Image (cartoon, rainbow, N blue to C red):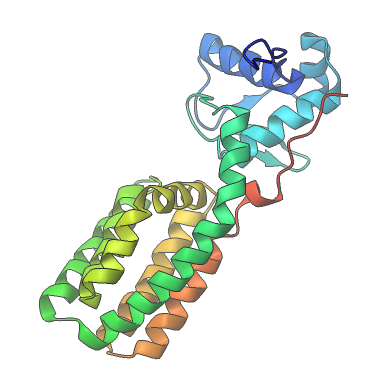
Length: 235
């Protein structure tokens, strides 16, 4: 029998809470750094349980849209609450571990090769990307594009066409993991520091140190709230 008339999915209650919060932020003209109402007040005004409100806040926190300060309230990290669909979060959480495994295997080797094969031009490109990322972090940006340029410069410095081709094949998944990591509070500055260590090892011509620095960096990329998040059911 055709599956085209399967039952319609009912939006989870906390997804509706997220939608209401997005509308509230827009209509009230709230901006980055502003505090949203307390959990208890939101539950009362929306006519839902505190559990549903808490689930909504956690989903927004996982996406890097709000910061929960224990005992101090919840604050906006962006000017808008452009939350992604729940199913997209679930799908990305499922894929992320495999992407991180691939990045570790490929980029750790690429860093070692870059240390062994880099030219003066390669080092100049790595340094330029690092300088651009430093400027972006100082401006308070996530520095996603600058992060991408740094890794591209390291890949180019390895002078391994086949490994570069493998990286290109998973570039969209890598970009997804990059954004997921950099939107963690404090992560852009941390990533900048780790990139500096990778660059130092490549410049020194030390493949082992470069591989170790890249491995540590990719491990850090994997420390994201999404992997601890669970999509809860409505109570």
